[in-house]
Length: 105
Image (cartoon, rainbow, N blue to C red; front, side):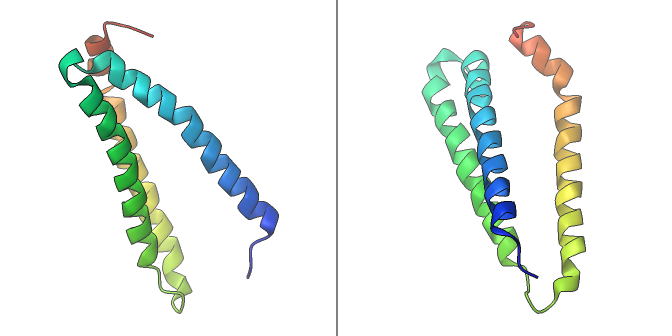
């Protein structure tokens, strides 16, 4: 089954808008939390992390076998579990992060 061009267009648009919203917030958090001495290096690490995320996504998707389409639910479920684990870690670190920032909004 082929996807519609509109589905692909809106998916790409949705991901692009998400990245445009996330990047300034992440860089702002880095500038607030990083020691002034290491600010530029840590901002560079933000971009390295984005590049590594793209690499891991490509490696993950590259493992997909077109002949065995029944593996897709398991593959997507592994993404769900990964997101739940990362979300839980962020939720746990929420209070210490507020203390580190001094309540800066």
